[in-house]
Image (tube, rainbow, N blue to C red; front, side, top):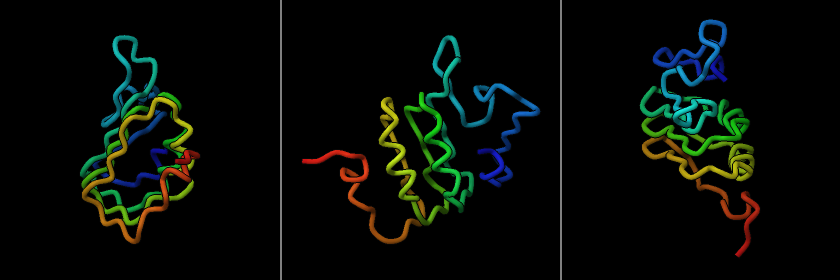
Length: 113
């Protein structure tokens, strides 16, 4: 995931720091710090959303903040895969350059009215 971010203000390198709980913008569950629960990439000049489907592999994720960037789209695969994260409580995509309309989230997440 780190290589796909490609921004200078965030540099995640598993070879230099194997524990993602110590990476900038990552928070883990206290006190054990055994699971990533929050990723905050707010205002780091992201312009590509290609990394978003990878975020869905973090099964313990509760909060994702990518606000204040230059993202133009939210990949449909991310929307459908994020619905499989049982503990996900917050997605913040505010203040980006999103284009077009969002798909029906309830359908993508497998919910119906």
